Length: 159
Image 1 (cartoon, rainbow, N blue to C red):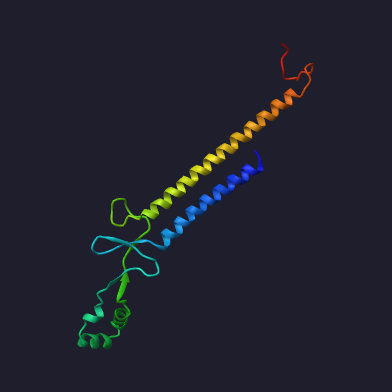
Image 2: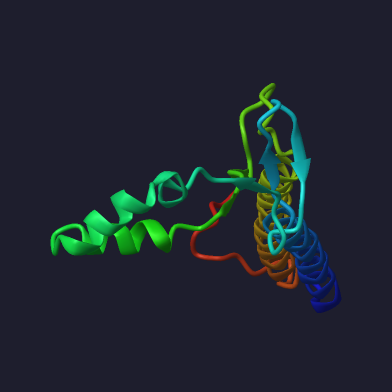
């Protein structure tokens, strides 16, 4: 096999793997978020859609807060209730189920692109192996033809 052909195969595989990597980065940076109305939206992972949370601390009356602060066993619970976030992000999906609202087309495209890359890699490796064996066979035939007509090898039978 010629080195230029091998180099072109390797470059093709690297470019294809770069495309798969690009799909993967886009999928991770822009997941699908399932919203409460059953729809889905693609957002950047750094600024996801947020939902309001029901904070138990806001529902407590001042009397209940005072009684919880006076008891030693409830102080930690009250502090945790104060620190509860007011908003939380909606759940996200990188792949999702086909036919469901959390279906992420880019995630499935990334998986299929990687499987396709594995197939191309296997095909090119198969071609390399076949070419290697074919070149080996041609070299042996050339070696046989290089001998003069009156010389026989030990393994050859007399006609």
